[in-house]
Length: 127
Image (tube, rainbow, N blue to C red):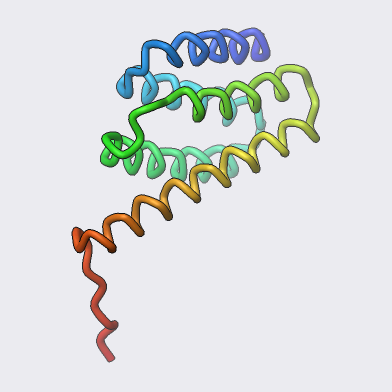
């Protein structure tokens, strides 16, 4: 049942690639986080993962104009979902790493853009 639910989410993410609706993405991402947390059978890991994903969703939603095409991030999620649903741990870890690397690079690019355009200033730490 869990694998079927994950595959259904993968199908919805596939459809989102043409719809390109950030609100729908946020809802699907929340569902994905919940389902993966339940499937992990580890409440501590699930709570930590949910917290991180909540922050990631907020960041992406706030900066959605800088990330107007959801197709690539949907593909990354779909690859991870399919690997998990197939029971392929190695592929799932590789897909999770690719997704996390993408998210990290996106965050760095956005922050660098904000710094370069002076939309963000960095002040030295007080001593």
